[in-house]
Image (cartoon, rainbow, N blue to C red):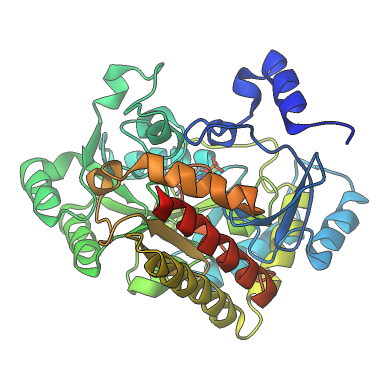
Length: 429
Ligand code: PMP
């Protein structure tokens, strides 16, 4: 063996803070040495030591057709020969905008950007510019990227570090962000009754994927929709994770609810830096160069990212894609539940399309406090027991998991046999 993950981690920490370029990769919650990935194929990732893992992270969501899909790779290679960036519009960007607008009817116009953070930040600015109001509402445990206004009791890596907010965010800015409990109808009703005319937007992950996997209830989402309409606030759905993942039309299709604005990322870029925000045409008309709300990007609509994204969007539109993806996810969930039951470990799961969550509890969590109560020690032991057996789960119990179309019976069976042994280990105490 020429190099180990430990050697790479030691070296990385000298020049990269924490040795990683995004915090949750550092294995801080679960402990141990992060795997430095050399390459990935289909459902597998191979680390620097040559160890192969079944991957249930999928680059945190984008890799819905599996890694290095030949059609996605070929599209990027072809685009690369035509130059990596122009800083001028292209016909391919129109194809992508048309595809997004077709798949998500709430999106009448869309702008492409390079990360979910950028998309969320821009959507908030546009909602404020359109309504002329400052206050925004978000929900505890939801993560919408790391823009200042949104790092107020945000989820994801922040929860992992047990840090409810971030350093470097001015209190003067954070005070405009009102944080309520997920799935709590009484709280949002009370807030709108008191301050409805000040609220620019309500931003929400329809199915939260940054505090594990927690579904917004249909009744709560309907109430959010009605209250926003009544008070002239924008309902912004952050579908960075759920978009093109829980169903072809995203969570909007699952719930049958039409938000005013939508934030997208991950799957639409096929693994390249590409995200988007869009929505009602009258709202999008406020954006520069048409309107007064400024937003721009040197690499926005990057031709390689658009090529990868379009290749992936073509693949996921094939008939039966989501039925197969859901069936694979269901098989995994039912198998994990059965394995836990065999060993008497309290456990349950939830999933939608190719996105899932699992909990060491007999009751599905409804909000962040439910998740924060969960036993991290049990999760850590399960995570390492699975990793030791070649299954790569998210290294934090606050993250959702992802299945790709490349995961087949072989991978599911292998995962379930690893899980059987892992639950047996937990049961032994
Ligand atoms: N919104 C949601 C729901 C996300 O899950 C994420 C990233 N995990 C983001 C926004 C931010 O996206 P990015 O990491 O591309 O900035």
